[in-house]
Structures are given as C-alpha cells and as structure tokens.
Length: 464
Image 1 (cartoon, rainbow, N blue to C red):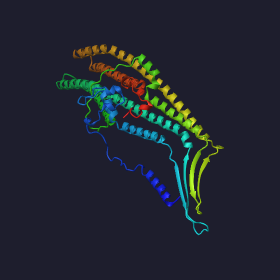
Image 2 (image 1 turned 90 degrees about the vertical axis):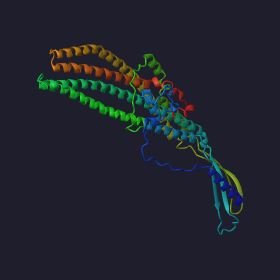
Image 3 (image 1 turned 60 degrees about the horizontal axis):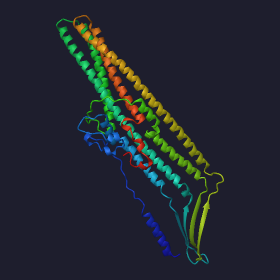
Image 4 (image 1 turned 180 degrees about the vertical axis):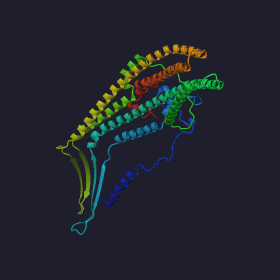
C-alpha cells in the first residue's frame, strides 16, 4: 500500500466525522416566565390528551369554571412543561438504543531507524467489529422503547393530577367564597343590631351589659372571616402558580355547580379495567416490560464476547500481508451472572411495586366511595335539622323583640343556626372534593377514555 492509499483512508475518516453534530450553548433564564394576564395563557385545546377537555366550549372572556381552569393548567403549568422535557430525553434514549454500534478502524505507522535491511516504512491497517453487540441490540432497543412509553404515561398521569389539582383549588376557593358570603351577611346583621343597641344605650333604654354581650359574637365572626381570607389568599396563590400566572393577575371564577357522584356500577366497571385506565399503572407496566427486556439482554450477555477484524500490513522490509483476527472471551468465571442476578432482582422489585400500587388503588377507590356515602348521610341529617333551627331562629327574634328572651339566649340560638349552615356548606365542599378524588382514581369524569389511547405506537403524540 502506498502513501496515497493511506491519505484516502484518512480522508474517508474525515468525511465520516464531518457528519457529527455541532455544539451550541443554551444559557439558563435569568427571570421568571409568568404570564402577566390570563389572556396570555395558551388555550390550544387540541394539544390536550383528554377528550372531555378538548370538546369543552372555552371562553376566556367569561369567569372560569373548574373545567376551564383545568384546561389552562394542563397547557400552561410550569411543572408540566418540565415533565414533558423528560419525554424528549426518553425519546432520544430510545433513538440511541436503536443505533447499531460503529466499527473500529485502526491505523499505525512505523519508521525505520538505522536498522539493517529496512527498506521502507511499515504500517498496519485494521477494521474490526464487535459482533456480540448485535446479539443484545434488539433487547436493548425494546427496553428503551418501553422506557419511552413509561415516561409518556408518567407525563399523562402528571396531566391527570394537574387537572385534579386545578379542580380541587376551584372547589376550595369557591367553597371559601360561599363561606365568606354567609359569614359576612351574619356579621352585617350583628353589626346593625349592635348599632341599634348602642343608640338605645345612649337613650337609656338598654344596659351596657346588653351592648357588650353583642361584641363577643361580632368579634368571633370577624376573626373567622380573617382566617378564611388568609386561607383564600394562599389558595389563590397556589392557583396562579399552577397556571403559570403572576400573583396579582385577576382571575374571576364562575359559581360552582353540583356534580353527581359516579354510580356504584360505574366504579365497579372501572375497577375491573383499572390497569388499562390509570396512566400510573400503565406506566409501571411499561417499566416492567422494559425490565423484562433488560433481563433478556443480561441473559444474552452471558455468551462469549466475539470480535471480528480484518488487517492489512507492511513491514519495514516491504512485505505486504492481509489477514484477519478473532477475539472471544472465555466464560470461565464471570459469565455475566452478577448482572443477570441484579436485573432479575430489579424485576422482582418492580413486580412487587406494581402489585402494591394496584392494591392501594383499589383501597383508595373504596375509601373514597365510603367517604362519599357517609358525607351523603351526614348531609341528609344536616338538611333535616335545618328547618327546625330556622323556625326556632324566627321565633327567637320575635321573642327578643317582645322581651320574652334574653339577648344571650338569642345569640346562642342565632349561632346554632349559623353553625348548621356552615356545616352544611362544608359538607357540600367535602363531598365535591371526594367526587373529584374518585374520578381521578377511577378514570371517570374528564379522564374517561384517555389512558387506553396511549399505546407504545402513539407514545410520541399523546401528551404535549
């Protein structure tokens, strides 16, 4: 082989390297990226993997209900955007696992010194390939594809949870608003009565003790209102963060409407299909399938490593040779047994994790059902007792005006009615929260017919 032949080989290597990717730095952001207005939020419902949300008639000009908030949360939540970035990593890893290993090219050149008989420079050119890598290639590729599907389903589960969090915050904020309205009305009545009593005190018609007695419930109402207002401020801050909004952006909410709880038949049917409905369970299944391939890859890896190469050489005497080389490992001590044992143990752990998650999912569903049934019973009890308390309050007001009841007795009677109304409102909110939880756990409501659509063949298109 002459020098021009070597030059062509070097040129070929340079051309191969010319197809490499280039590097471009990506600096980190230096400021928050929060929307300054609700109108700046993404509302492209076609990007959402939840059919119930894509069909929703969305109007940003109107106050938002629970579904509207869920749409904005899925499309704009900063944490979800970070989760979706993980999907890009998983896809890249699956792409990398599908690539075949490159062959190895070796070139060496020797120059003679003052050696007798040396007539020319020597070289050695070799091309080799790891045949063993081809044996485990399909298993590694399948494992990476299942891992990408797992990440895809994990992102979908994160979307489900984001929807649930948006609907829960809506329920809590509107519930607090209803509670505040009730308390503000009551405080206004006590403040009005206090003003009348203070005027009567100035005229000498009542005692100072009667006036002071009304300060206690008024102050108690004020403290309760302030506590709820602080809680409301925290919930609104959480909602803005969930939507990727600046904290001071107005976000009007529509009045809530009562939701029907899933029926026992719907829940029973969902429980039977739970492994094919819940994205978190499906993600664990994909992870287990990936681990099965890793076990198979480890078993294949116990076969001897096999490397095949071809060489062309010339010594300093000008003698040209062509040959080949084969290297093979001897499976005497290692035989990949440690890797096999580790992968099998990992598979057993994933199996136990999946069974535990499946058991917990069943228990959570039944617990939510029991909570809803109990809250319904308590609601009926509260509703049954309310008319009697309202009637007693009306009678107490008349008796107070006629002097047949002391002011303290009237305050206690009025407080009992307020407590009953607050308990009824709290019961309605707790029931709504449990219905939201049951829908998330069973894949009913807005989650219906979504997870089952995410298959490995569609893993690149399901979430955003």
